[in-house]
Length: 195
Image (cartoon, rainbow, N blue to C red; front, side, top):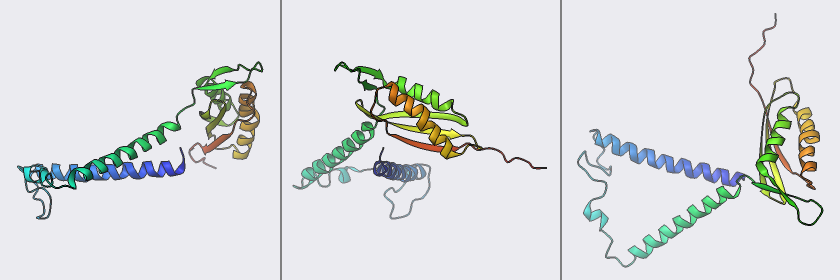
């Protein structure tokens, strides 16, 4: 997921959450008997969210229905864009392996992920590994997350991962390249006591 999409997701989810908390909290507070300020949209326990006059206020105006339809259409298009942008970066289900006969073979993406994860996790100083295949089936990419033990040099771990697990995965699948985004994180540990 790109950085822009991540920012848009966080902003939209935060905004929707804030609106729901404020509106829901205000309705709950008024419903429990709290006196709202004079400018607030609810007057008391018996008040409804929208009265009949508020719901039918602009129904006879010529601009009302085209505006409502246009706003709903824009919201629908934005929701569809958001959904397709989020789903587009899903996990790669299969990788096309060049067998040399022009036909090719399909390798399950989960199988390649599992092998890559297991080999990365078995490297010296790696506490936990996780891989995720993305991209297209004829040009896969991978994202690797490694949790390193405190004594491990990150540069050495990255070199080992590139020379071993990623190279083996690329060669076994017959790929020309296997671009990888690697994230390294050190495991938390308790301070050692020196006496």
